[in-house]
Image (cartoon, rainbow, N blue to C red; front, top):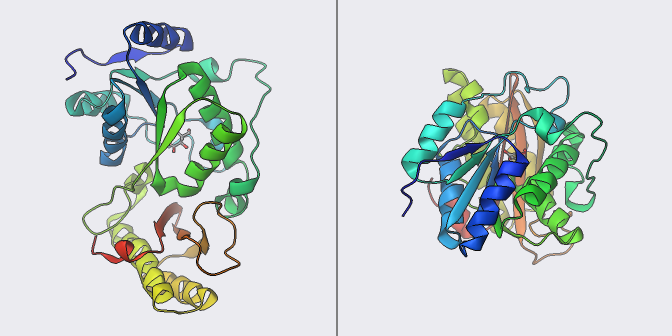
Length: 292
Ligand code: PAF
């Protein structure tokens, strides 16, 4: 049971020193990388880390390298005091590592981690810069903390697959845990970016998950994948989305196009409501059809 208040650290040196002491006490360490604006989904990631680790670090860093110049880096919600309070109340973290940009990217920083394979297509089509930025910062965070486990949400399913690949390819000694997506009462996946939605957009947004489930139902009922996808895209537009960046069904382990029957599948989508871009994904499996 945690009794000490959360320690806020700004430098990798302080983080390493703290973790060194924990290690000398025999503790396992879990890392939950975030960009802050924490919601119940993030707290769930912390709870998952706590299952196997006595000490949990949340990193909070709005990573400039994963935003294109036209994206929402400047207006991304920054709520550090509220995040610390939520983590303390939920006893979800022992340490928050919230470095300044210069700590992560000091002057002259020249290295980036570039991933192919699962990073191909989907998010990369609309956000070609994204996975390079994510892979670079997550690699750095993993090397700074050297945790036993690191927990990421399945809501960013392609990101999770990309991080698994980085860890495998670079032989980083950490177990990556994927956490099921936390959802609102009506099925909308929790996201820090939901804060951008107006009330009318919030009503439309729920259709994203509803449509994913109708695509899954179609596939499980034998509808051919291209037809199920076409129906889903049309349903999203009919529900009020302004654009569908992608709605695709991929192999859930490799994210490759499913070319043969009988493989585990995942349906993934990104759609836009005005300037707000929402993503969601689910396993193509009967369990996904239960009411939210
Ligand atoms: O999912 C996020 O919040 C970010 O992409 C991550 C993994 C913290 C990297 O900045």
